[in-house]
Length: 286
Ligand code: NAD
Image (cartoon, rainbow, N blue to C red):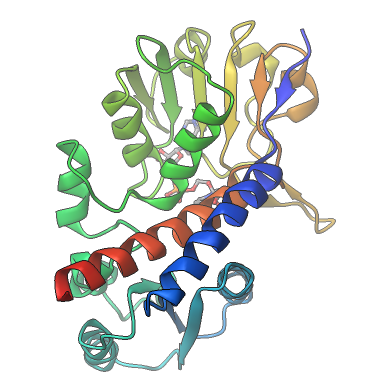
């Protein structure tokens, strides 16, 4: 079997076209969706992620602003800036680019953003809403993964989904979303015993480890759907996933590439959440 590739870049372009039209209509009605991204320090990877988000906003017609703060900014100063953005009616979505420097407590910062502007979906209130199946901002990467599965009409209900990774931004929320869609979910991590015996049962395998090519075809059930979330930079500078693409391609039914897979979808769902925030806030204010 040779897997059908789920092209996250192509799907993103399609979804962003529809969003562009929606933004045009919102603007005609006087609503100008705006995202503010807070960037602390000048870590090259963070800078590049933030610029990617700004470019995507621009292409979709969403206003965006990058608030650049020095690495030495204090936690109190950062919280004050967030407070200002919370109270700025022209800002609909706030995203603080992680990781933050060690002297700032990330959880405190995440909780300072009001849930109505938390377009990353990381605030505990929004996580709780997701867990109980309420309307909320879904975390962008898990939301993108579910959208990719749906784009190919890949069944989730009743399927065995195995997630490798238990981070708060990918592993845990994607497991919860799959459960919300009625999958039977197994979450694996670095302490899991006999990982392979579990992954080989997966109808849907989500890999979010952060180590290049650790999952090869020996971990895969014939005909499975494999979603590679990992982004790893090799010594030669190329980006690659956690999955050994070439060998897994011959065994899976569906497979996402890296790059052009989950990465672009994460940004697309951020745009979607920002539009949702703009509509939500305007509705409340109106
Ligand atoms: P993380 O480091 O917070 O979590 C990694 C998880 O993998 C942990 O739960 C750990 O227990 C597990 N793990 C590590 N080694 C393992 C092993 N040998 N076997 C089984 N489990 C193991 O990372 P994260 O933030 O969840 O990100 C994971 C990867 O996804 C990274 O490469 C990151 O860059 C990438 N990522 C991509 C996107 C995207 O948009 N495509 C978004 C977020 C993260």
